[in-house]
Amino acid sequence: MLTCKEQVARSSDYLDGQLTFRERLLVRHHLMFCPNCRRFIRQMRLMQATLRIMPDEPVDGVEALAQRLADERLKDHKGGE
Amino acid sequence: MAAADDAHLLERLLQGEQRAYKELVTTYQSAMRAVAYAIVGQRHADEVVQDAWLSVVRNLARFEGRSSLKTWLLTITANAAKGRYKQNRREVLLDDLPSPHGTIGDDRFTPDDGHWAVAPYAWHQDTPEALLTEDELRKCLEHTILSLSELQSSVLVLRERQGLELEEICNLLTLSLSNVRVLLHRARLKVFATVEHFEETGEC
Image (cartoon, rainbow over all chains, first blue to last red; front, side, top):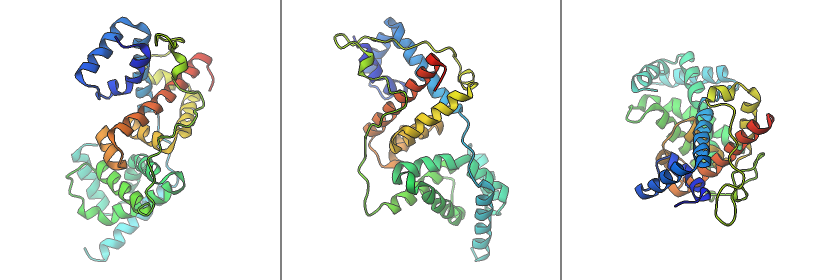
């Protein structure tokens, strides 16, 4: 049986589907009997979901950059393609 | 973004429509910046992203939709970044920098049997939306992400925020799968520690 410390060490690989079949069973088995580790994994998933929906920081100068890129495209295009 | 959306956006980009470029930059700049940040570091990341954008525009007509637009943009960014570092390719630094709220480290477990010595604190919220209603927590998370090493933070952003597969991250950043796994795990534990600290104390 895995210890809690070993379970935590494997937690990212567990969440990313990177464990072998046997290791995955070991983690599942541990989780079945360990409420603390179940809470840990549940909160890891919640942390992941939180990062996912966090709003992006606005890009500085997006209007100007977009204009420059559009101009660049039109210039290239005129140059014959 | 689905292939059909890509194709539609591409058409507008080829016509030089400013709004289409704005959409492109808004959607993809964060992911591109994360790739550049990992390869050339903070000092040169912005320049690399600028170079990459110009290269994107010049090669737009050659995009054939064999990969998604996102993959294509990130590959161009990675190439722009690697070009800049061709001479002195950095070693993969797995350095672990201290984080504002620490991590879930060895001290959380009893030395003799590896059980939790300090059990994970139960968070008050159980949805991401509820957690993020605290604007303070969002700032606190941004602060923690900034404290990570360049590689750790980029791998975290590319995986959790941009939803890239581990394989894609390996290819873009020229890292081994085991390095990506280590970087990601360390980054996650630090972010976990930040949320835990916030939930426990109500402050950053």
